[in-house]
Amino acid sequence: MATSLFAQTRDYITVKGKVNFPPAKEHQEKYPFTLKDKPMKDAEVFQTIQLKADSTYEIKVPAKTPRLYSLDVFGWDRITFWAGNDDLKIDFRGMDTAKIVIKNPPYIFIESEGKDNQLINMLNWETHQNYQTSIAAGKSQYMAMQIKDTALTKNLQDLVMDQFSRNSATAKVFVKAFKNDPQVVYALGYVSPRRDQDFILEYVNPLIEKYPWLTEAKEVKENIDKAIAAAKKTEDGAKFINITQPDPNGKNINLYDYLKGKKYVLVDFWASWCGPCRAENPHVLKVYDKYKNKGFDVFAISLDDKKDRWIQAVKDDKMPWAQVSDLKGWKNEAAQYYNITAIPMNYLLDANGKIVAKNLRGEALEKEVAKLLDK
Image (cartoon, rainbow, N blue to C red; front, side, top):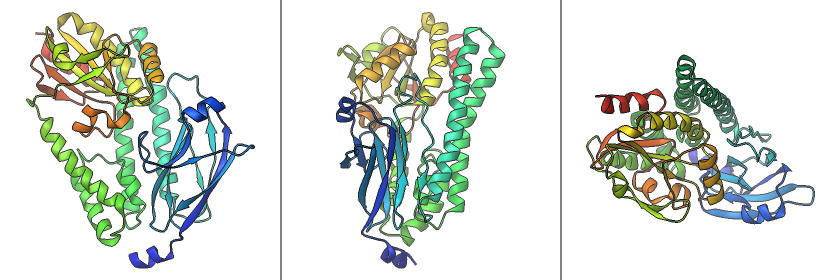
């Protein structure tokens, strides 16, 4: 069956569409429209795409070996698609939301006559809906905090946290429904290799056997090995690596130096383009303001690759603590060492740099800090 599917696949498929609100020429040159290996900001670029005069585009994409590709549209829109048997039409909204502080991405539908991208379309829709709820709840949470409505703040925090769980649960449903299709590797990418290793292995091992050419399935399994290794590095009591990276002014800040004179420091991985991170920032600020005089501080590591957006987000979210970034995106040195594949992610360190807790979101952060400092 796998051999038959492979043989039916075309050498190339056509992907075309329109960018309804293309950015200025200078922006296009700085942040080009590209066909990439993965949906990561710093993935390998296969092709730079030029818009026609009417803002349309058309490209040929290799499909002899079926696989996932990603389109990065001038840094504003992004979509992953499956290149197999179907020609595709993908329209993008473009940069008409550029001035929104927390960028609210549109839902992008992949049009075709076949079903190669059916799973991606449906999972993207569910994820998009959850994301909209997270953004709305995060904004309301911030307003509730301003008026000191603690009950409403907690309810909205719970709602934001629920969306993270819903994304994973939804992905698992799609994995079960499409378990025999190679495109299911897309849904497996939404399942945590840290928390759901057994679930992933149950479905990825048969995929590798059935589709030996499916590189993405092998990468999913490799990610589990990386997650296991990272988990050992971040066990309670493990010493966090020392980090030296530049702040927005270009001055290098050393984590171990920053720990001196403090009781607990939260190492927080985030990025300006990460909506859930931005929604979480007001709560981190609340905990910082409440416990900064008792020895609590924050050391934020941004996975940005655009300095101007990073600096603007720090200003907009009013974050007074240490901010560093090597501006390498997901290839940030610390993120690579700890196999950070999803953000927000954080680690609470004691004065000696040892990990006492991790992945503290919403009310969990305040509870943990209160337990340690309200003595």
